[in-house]
Length: 347
Image (cartoon, rainbow, N blue to C red; front, top):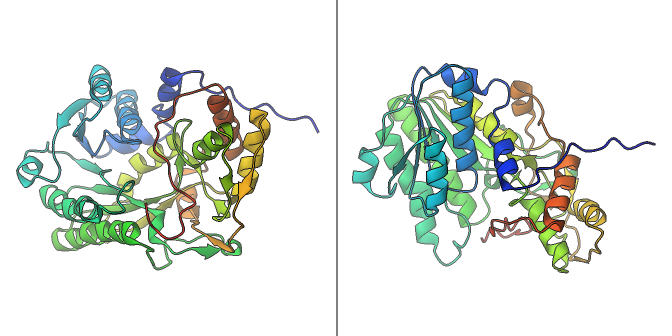
């Protein structure tokens, strides 16, 4: 059978970031429907910069003059400068400081991206402050304003591979303090929603991937470095980060005082061993494995998301091929491992 070629991969970081921030259909219309400015809190992280720029580009394309505010501590000043040059209004703020939170800009829509995960084993108190205390201050500041709360599929339990992944109707059973703190973030925002009537939606994500970060990049860099790939976590869901940003921005119209949940991930349950084999083949490299596949994994069913917004714009196989090309060519990595193989909830 003749193989259909994959779309051309981005050749450098400028092309990659331009693609990641290119709005998908419906983003501009849905953001413009808010009728005012939007603010993204924690916009300097892995996902924030390109999601912020997508919001700006989408509103521009929709003919809206609404301001896009991006709030962060900005540990990378170049990221802040780039967003400013492209029409985003940036603000430096410490979200853990009540006085700083009170000065945050007014908005018609809020996207709460601030979170702490990696390096938190041994620093659990900082994680709980970021993931549970800061949301209380943010929710108080933005009473009544539609809010998208970035959350995590880690709040769900491991499920058998034949189960198909957890849906929004499955009860959370967080494993470990990180997952518990993620659920605490949701509970705080939900309590604020109940108390003040704030329209809210919980956006439960796993795993967003781009070429510099994510499960696929983690596996590819291990292969490139001659290190074995752990298959103890037998399978994963992955999704292109551009799709995640578009879904998250559009989900603001789903916000409701009942604080509904929306799962966000890719449609396939992909064995880690298969991902590694496909990457190794594309990279012309050998791959070694360690561990043995467990009977269950951290998996989500994002069928509700697809019904509302459509399937991902980029197939998982294409994303795998792009990642292999990027890593094989020495493309930069963000250096933030997902630790997807972790089954004890310690990050």
